[in-house]
Image (tube, rainbow, N blue to C red; front, side, top):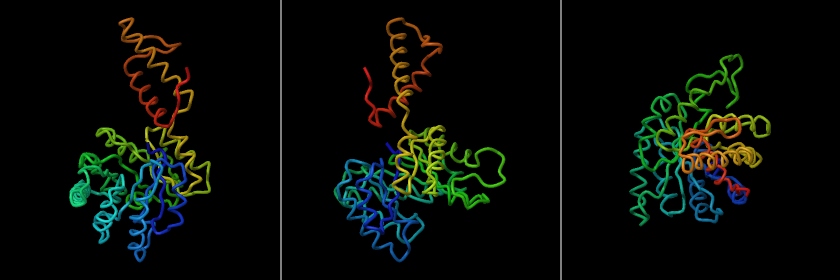
Length: 301
């Protein structure tokens, strides 16, 4: 589950300790944009120490610096060699070559450290026009890939969206959702390779209603989760990307009715209430039940 992916500046030991007790599905320690150049080395040291601690079974990730920087290789070497980090988040991916580079480096580090080769996953962050144009190839670049992540701020700068409201609709735009195309393109690339799709952050951390709208919109589109920048945003993300109890219960009824129709009645379609359900209905219901089960729902009997 990556309903809520909490960004924690690795330069702050206080924020790291606080994050251990928060109900985010994934916590990622950030070595990139949240850390000033002069603080990179200390942040890396903090991250190495932090990933070795107790995170209560949640996913633990580190966002390293992008592949073109002088910090990237050392970030990977240091944080992976201990064998406790689940995922490396690679920012500013503009080409499948970036993912291939990280895959090869991870394999080298794992072998040197005596770790199972392939145990460290990758999330690739799509943040500009070049990355979006190459997103299908990026999604296919490594079997380590687990998710594609949309980076709205850099993307806005890359394509020239005339707004400083990251994730918000630009003033004067009347075409609907200005981010629908990149979000959908990333989603299709992810799903075509069996990957998760994660929406970027909503920067107005005190705007609870805006955060709920943003998360609900991405969830409705089919995204699996969203980055959160503040503890107060976690609950909204967890709720948005889990099905409602009513939808979960209905999905289970659809599956049960369809199984009965196909195995007992030898029929490929059946009425459930006033709705005709078939194999496509079952697939949709299975996806909802899987999300609900992962979120800890207990079927009512």
